[in-house]
Amino acid sequence: TIRRDGNVGIGTSSPLAKLEVKGANYVLTNSGQAVGGIHVSPSTGAALDAYGGAISFSAGGTGSSAIAAVNDGSSDTDGNGLAFITHPSAGSSADGEEKMRLDNVGNLGIGTTSPSTKTHIVGSSVSGTSYDSNDILTLENNSFSALNIVASPTTASTLIFSDDTRAVGYIQYNHSGNYMRFNSNGSERLRIDSSGNVGIGTSSPSSKLDID
Image 1 (cartoon, helix red, strand yellow):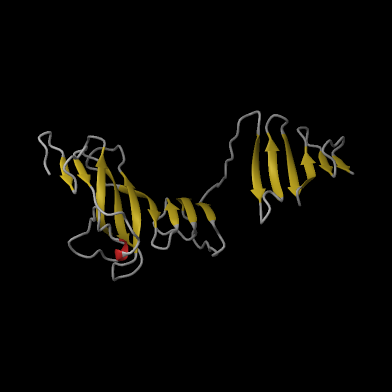
Image 2 (cartoon, one colour; image 1 turned 90 degrees about the vertical axis):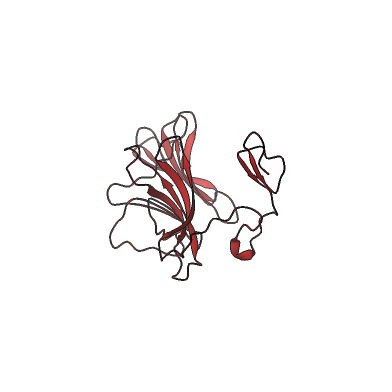
């Protein structure tokens, strides 16, 4: 249906947008294809690590961002991941740049097109780095690398360790009191106060090392 206002409807006679498609709900069968919606495919199969069908988005200029299928699994084009591409502000002649990839096995990479763990964030790659199947989050940078936990000045920043019980251990920095504490088996075991005193078995150390 093409309405007088220019809206186009497929599967609907009253489209509310420039293009509205109505069809069957998406299902995981049919090899992942959106048979009831929109399926974008290239005219020829994409080579290994090449892009396939894509949708691009523009803010009004020539430069565009895009989401593209990418053949990152095999030469038969069935191992499909998704590439997320942005465009720099260096003018319309600049190429798009892939910034994030969700590969065909579910690994998410930011700053890398070949994530090696479930979440792999790369500032710059480190040569010779090895990864383990138990690595859920990898932060990689070929320089100084940091994990910055930011909280309000009246609360705390915490790194929590859990199993079938939440927070059986944690490392916490209290911003209002400017002290750090270490908990194991659900209880505080060590504290470093704002003056640098260390307490083991006490939360109020009175000397450089106070053991209770």
